[in-house]
Image (cartoon, rainbow, N blue to C red):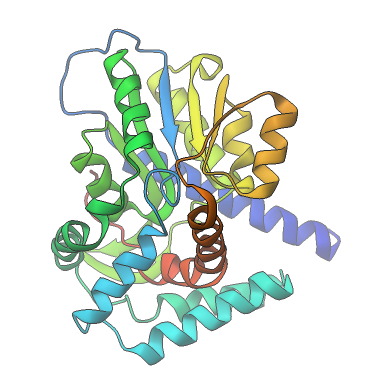
Length: 293
C-alpha cells in the first residue's frame, strides 16, 4: 500500500507531467516552413511580471467580468478557495480537486470562439501597454539570432497565444482546458502549467523539436520557475522576487530588473497577491483550450 503522503506527491507529479505534455502538444511550430539558422536553440519566457507587468490572467478576468462573462460572486468564490489552499498549504487531493472544480464551473458551456474573440479585445485594451520593453527587446534579440522563442505560462493557452502572436514570437505553451465540439467542459487537461509542469512542457517540446537545452535560454521573475530555469544552459532572472534574486546571485545567473525603487516594491507585492490567490483561481477558472495555435 502506498503511503498517503507519497500518493499525494505522485498525484501532483502526474498532473504536472500531463499538463506539461498537453501544453507542448497544443503549441504549434511557426507557420513558416523555413528552418531557423539555429534550429537546436530556443528561448523560453514566463509571462507574468517577466514579459508583462502584472498577471495576464488578472487582466483577462477583469475584461471578461466587465463583459458580464461571469459574476463577481463566482470569481470571488473561486479566488477565495484557491487563495486558502495556497496560504494554508493544504494539499489533500480531494480538497484541491474541489477547489479546482469550483473554479472551473463557470467556464463550462462557453465556446472557444467566444473566448478567443474576447481575448483579442482584452489584449488591446489592457495588456499591450503593459509589455516590458526590456524583455521584449531580449526576445527580439533571440529571434534576430535565429532562435525560436516560446512563452511558457500558467495563463490559458488562448491568451498566451495571442500575446506571442502580437509580439511576433514563435508560439506559446499555457494551461490547457478540455473542450468538446468547441465548448468547454470545465475540466483541465492535467493541471495548471505552473512550476514543475513548465519544465515538463519544455522537455516535451525539446524532444519534439530536437532542441539542445544546454544551448537554450529561459527567463522568469519567480522562484517557482526554478525547474524551468535550471534545465537550460542560460537562465536569466527578470524582475525577480527576493528568493529568485538570491538564488540567481548564488548561481551567477544573469539578472535584469526593469522596475525601479518604489515601483519595483509595489509591483512585487501586487504580483505576489495576484499570483498567489486570484491568478491561481482564475487561471483554473478561465483556462481555455482552443484550437491548436
